[in-house]
Amino acid sequence: MKKPDTARADAALVAADNDGALVLAVTGRIDSNNAGRIEAEILKHVGPGLDRLVIDLAGLDYISSAGLRVLLITAKKMRQLGGRFALARLRPQITEVMEVSGFTAIMPCLASLDEALARVARP
Image (cartoon, rainbow, N blue to C red; front, side):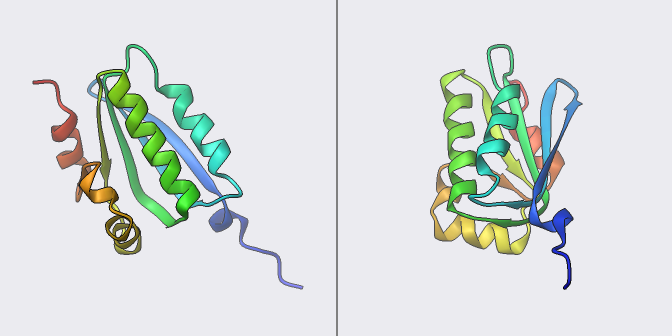
């Protein structure tokens, strides 16, 4: 019996500072099996003092409605804190999901990390 590819079946999150902006790189898949964990990991970073957040989705292979909910909660939390938020480097299949769900109208989705960082830059 073939073992499932666990590297692709789950999501991982890596945090990095980029000139004062927090960049969270998400890889793998976000679905109902791991959305709660990913949400908790993201929100662990979001709080008073964080004014700029970019979520880099270059390594995200799949997102379900549960994953979309995670992004929406994150965007709302950043808005409540008065911070700036953007998504970067979405793969075509993720862009399609975001467009069909209407998320591209409510949160910035930028083609490159540099564009996303410029979008969240302090005025």
